[in-house]
Amino acid sequence: MKESNAIIRTATPNDMQSVHALITELAVYENAADQMTNSVAQLIEDGFGVKKLFDCIVAELGGEVVGFALFYTSYSTWKGACLYLEDFLVTEKWRGKGIGKLLFDEVYQIAKKRKVGRFEWQVLDWNEPAINFYKKYHANLDPEWLNGKIIFD
Image (cartoon, rainbow, N blue to C red):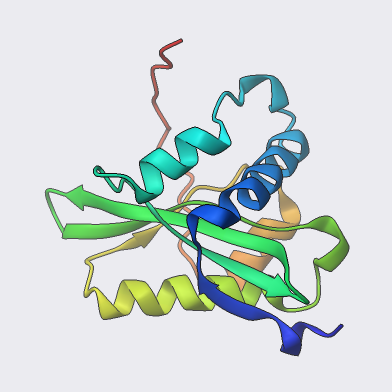
């Protein structure tokens, strides 16, 4: 199948098993599988429950989910509402075929439609394929800011 056959659509609760598998693939790729604690049930609750904490789109080929993008609205005191792309992955078998571009372009269009002040994401400094992908969009990959976090177990 060619990437032109890929369907980009809004994810449903039934897709969360596949999305979870892709998130696991991403965690392994980023050498952080031991840090992943999320579950399919938690994804369904957080994405489709009362709180609706995120949005998710998927790329589907022949009835199989082969990629996803998970994003949510954040808020900037300088820019107002922003769209934050939390994670975005195409399974290894289908990388390099334009499916990632279709997913990213869809999230970009969603950001424009929502009229957000900023569309942002993070990328690991060693992930050259992703960095090169984002450079094609003339993205500002800012080395100045350090990421801070506190992880609750």
